[in-house]
Image (cartoon, rainbow, N blue to C red; front, top):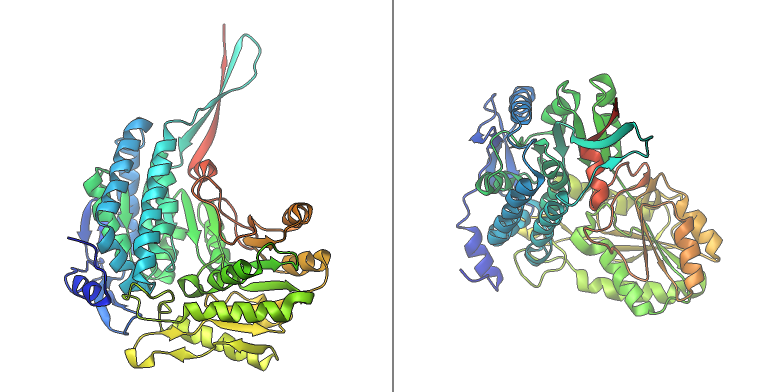
Length: 499
């Protein structure tokens, strides 16, 4: 079957999908123990795609038992790294072989443009799994520098049962960033996708089984955070909890870990990333184009969104006009149209949140320079124009709080020191960017920024070889790169005295 080229062709392809809304526990698809379900509603038109199992404590208990038994059996945890690699590489291949179905699930369930899901999300998911798989049999343990009559070994062991709670904005990619290193290091995993976008995770479970991942090693529990998410976070037999989502939820998960078994907790939380443009930026048109995409891509539902645009005062007015012009290329359209760049907001609740922040920006005295309106309401879907606010101060609500929508705040500065102070004046520290032709200024500014990722003369760079995570209340631990393995393994020191 050739890849659809038009909206109509994608819609026809979507009409052939068989949605699976069941949980996946110990190698079997099943309803929730309670029989409860919730509706998966498409943000494209507000219509129900399917009913999804609403898991809770009983389902969490079953999944943890399955995960623990599979881990203790050693069928996966004790398998040679090279053999785990082979299975995971097949998993990545199957993801690519099913790229159209997975892309459609992402678009229909979450609202992102089909072209982005097909060309971005699905290949990135496969890449995360294949890169991690290729790395796992190339990591060596250590020997300590001991006296001649002693041997000190430093080894890594899989941590055990891992619960991964992932967000709705990049359902496949965020799952892969957790699954790949957790599985590669020999753990058993329970994936809790967001109730806003669970369908691709459920499909992923079938592909994992097809690839040869043993029963019980990979389980999927759809449901709400306050039910099954809380159950996993408090579970006494979960060894590690990994999470991507809001800072507020991340804090609560740390509390749950302390209230239960002190499980390892690794969190990637919110952001309010500064995008700093100096007057000597090498290409102001490119800087403006990337500033627009930094806030409008994925409808602004990105933890690293460049939501604070810091511009040197001498070029601020001119640069704002360039950004406003660039944003016109990001007007919302039907997500199944391959020409669409900005899709639908994930659900009605998130749409109302974004609109409330736009209203707050106006009330606080910021200048609405572009966008700001809900559109395409006749579709029944949830669409809002990318929005540009000028004359914002860093203390305004729209500059201080994470909106998770396409709302950009422009803040002027006069000196590099002032730009750094504004950028760092945030509870978050996930990402930042610097635009300047002065290499000294670029490095000095990047070094001074309290952020886990800093990009120079571009926005949102990096790949699987670079760690990803934040400073401050943006979280702890790192996804991607070899550093991700640290989250899913325990270090053991074994000391041998030779006679």
